[in-house]
Length: 423
Image (cartoon, rainbow, N blue to C red):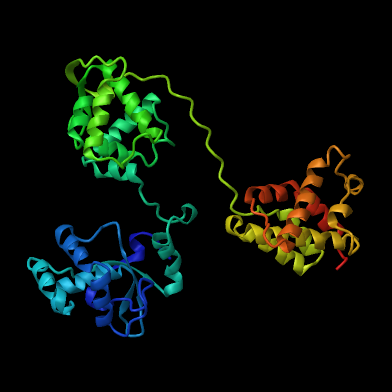
């Protein structure tokens, strides 16, 4: 697949047709049925009005696939193509929207060419559609902007002042980056109230640069109180105008506030930085799956045991969070099978078989050194049995199970090596 301009071409809209098998909807029999659906459900008229106003988005190309008639259908851009076709010929629109499309297309200069990338088939384009439409996908797909990022991109909108206040407060150490997540709407709601803005001496919410005429000492006291209350969720968006006015009056009466006013000044240039509060430690991400051990994988192949290979693949492939009980039984079965191939008798639990003496002979040290391993072995034995046999109790700790497999990694390799040629 060529990348860049060389991989794209200009194609007439008359040669490109709507995809009647688009993932957004059930398959349609013809173009008219597809148009009617898109106009009814996918806001094509709004797209058409936006195209007339601004033109086609230069950041988005059409993905097309050639069909048996030497024409094309859209693999990406179905709604945009529908809007263009109806602007070019409003009579194609559903009768209920024809009048509006004709009005929208009144001063329309028809688009004669579409900037397209051609793909051989659906399979070739599918992976790129996933990157656009299937969500973040562990970072591989498009990420949606959060409220702060939208506000920064929007420029001088109603959130601009609130965003600047949060930026200043974070720089001063009043609020941490983690604490401010999801708090923009609360700050915006309060600063959208003229009484609250007057208390802090702030200018309009859409101002390019936040400024105040409250003296610096007073402003710092009130800003610290306000933002701290936001961070600690003492105040939220669930408040009416009277509640904000009452909060503002109490804020102006905070200890140490004089009520003095001075010359208006830009906040980023005059607010003194305070000693930052210690940042909260970042919580580690919970393990999503059991981490595979490549040495163990190779050793299992050399036994050889298809059962053990499939068991281990499933243990490492199935997500922990929603399937911990299933994986607990799988872990129990995995150890049962491995120890059986190492000579464990049928009626002997693997927790007994893997005694401290046996572990010492396998090179894992004395009882003190093998305590952690033996604890994990017993836990897997217990949790597997409970999950299998108890009518209510089951094992649900995904982090523990992931850690247990990490703890046993060397032992599992040793057991697998010991089972070679015994199947």
